[in-house]
Image (cartoon, rainbow, N blue to C red; front, side, top):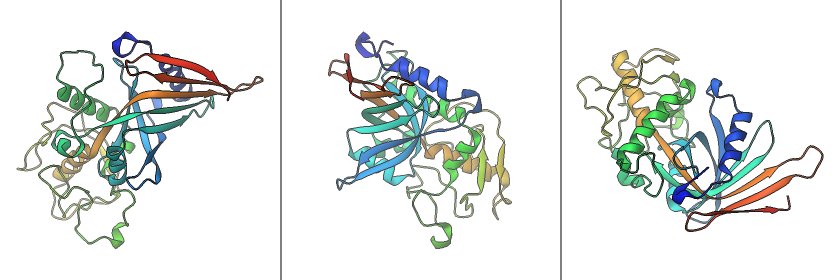
Length: 292
């Protein structure tokens, strides 16, 4: 495939075909991968992210998803210029080790925390507004999520003590400024209550404001499954909408632009094959076969 500056991206068709062979897209199940980074104190860190899609206009780019409330993951991504993702295919057993840079695309109201959307990436329409494109893409990917995975964005912050050791009524959001991100009020203690969450129409909850991110349009019909009844003092419909809106604000895209790809492919009879692809500063890719 052709990437930025009309240079071919030779590893992209290999990865695309591997994904088609190894995963059933009709099941809409999350594809979990491991990302290796370095903490600010120099110690290594491996965390889990979810593959979402390829960016068709720019074959160098892969789209992943994560939760902005995952403070450690967000901090690691922001503090390092380079990250590495290891992807082992479950059926063919081939592996792709991708090295590159990650950009965070969060709800626009959090742009002051995570920076502006990526700029040096090829879009389908070069004249389109970058901010509008990425918010539209975040919405599109949100709609594509499996309902069970979407529900995970209502859950408490990873790595924090369970609710039994948390002060009662404390919001799960890592962001305490509720003018920047919508969080359920103390009367709605979500915990792990929601196990299924379908996209719903965006509108105000009660007399409250609409999304601070300026979300426009319809996300489709809503159906949600939960364990237990609605929280005391909250109308069920408003509670569901509040939970949905805060989950969407918690959802972010990780835009990964690869600069190096190490592809290892096992052989049935012959030795494994291994090829390393490296991008130059002008965008041209070179490939070299190396010992496995």
